[in-house]
Length: 163
Ligand SMILES: [Zn+2]
Image (cartoon, rainbow, N blue to C red):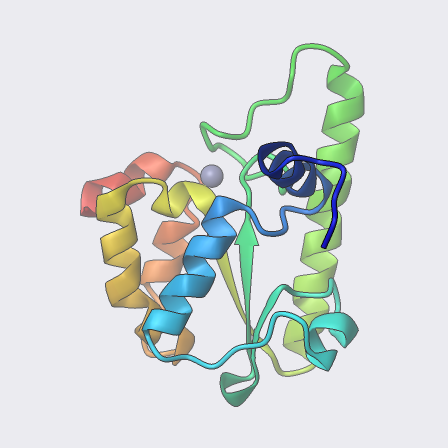
C-alpha cells in the first residue's frame, strides 16, 4: 500500500479519525491472539454490527471495544480533558461520541451481543496489562463480571489500587 503519510503521521491521523490501529488496540488484538481467541477485524460482522466494532469474537457473540479516553469521553478520567481552545466545540463533539457509543452498545446488547469496553487508561502500564491478560478470558467468557466495571471505573486510580 502506498501512502502519502509516513508511518508516525499516519498512525496519528488514524487515531484522530476513529481510534483505529492505535497502540492500545494493537495491544488488545495481540493479547487476544496470544490467549488463543479467534476474532475478526474485517469480517461481515465488523461492517454490519452497530458502530462497526473493530474486534468481533463470533464464537462468544462478543465484541471488544477499545475506547480511547479522550475521544470516547471517559468521564472523570485523567486522560479526558477538554482542550482549552474551542472548548464548546470539543465538548459537543465528545458528547456526541459518547451518545453514539451508548446507542451502539444498547443496540448490540438488544441483539444479544456481549459488549466488552476496554478504556485505554485501564491498561496503560505494564502491570495493568499483566492484570488484564489474566482477567480477559474470564471477562470474555462472562465468568468475571466484577473486574470490568473496575477497569472502566470513573476514577482510574481505583483500578491502580488493584495492581
Ligand atoms: Zn480513562
